[in-house]
Image (cartoon, rainbow, N blue to C red; front, top):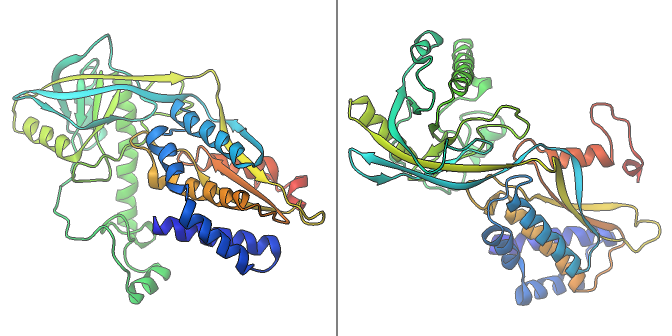
Length: 396
């Protein structure tokens, strides 16, 4: 809460400084008092996360949040509030049901989440059966599974090893560490001890590229075999945390097989059992739904018009991305940012402030898939970076 409060103050201070050419201590104090006594930022965050749910771009959850935000911005008194299409995004998707359990050698429910834009398990009700563990280090070894995976439950061998973590989730960087980071020395703060690409020697880069190429061939091979369900392990996360993104694309013409990410604990337990020759049986029902009636992507856009005849065409923009992945409610990425932006404009309107320049808020979509919402907003309003043919709004 303190971080959000501080950010709201800094943004509001920035807005006022730009709108009135110099900070106004009286206005700043009014903003502080209003935020301390009547803050709505946590209520905004609650509606964008808990109430709206996951907000995968163009999904029903995204539109729950987008339409709620639009209605709230109207209530706050902003003008030109609308959902603005930015271009074709593709099919939207949501999960309808996900049940995955091991039934032998004993019963255990498994923590699982479908990958976005993947299909459902076949038929009505649950599928049941054993698991095929694919162990192949190259395309030659992969051929032994050709024609054997259709309608099966499969998982691909993972070299992941779980290790206890003694590093705190949050830590303060020393000045020496910050200096190294600024000079691109050492390893990245995120990603463990894996060297950055520009720190690899030629052999490491070749090995990295080879692994990537085989991973792509493996994915293509598996999809063509049409298994009933793929069990995957996330690239990140431990202690039962799931990190799940996409297993298909909003524009894919071929439906990707049902594919769920298991927690690392559950996935590796299954792998150890199978590798030891233990018979493992599964029961699963995964149902997902695609929507293709509207292929457009949308941003939420609103503004507080400027009051100075000479400066009102100049725009101060606030923004955050409203979309999230399907695995959670996207509180920090980036409902927090959207909540702060909405609270900032609420403060200005509730206090009756009249900025000289126009203040525009935009809540983007398609950011998780490639910054589509914000990039297309620039392209549609200001200029196409590929051509740099400036549009009228660019020169304002």
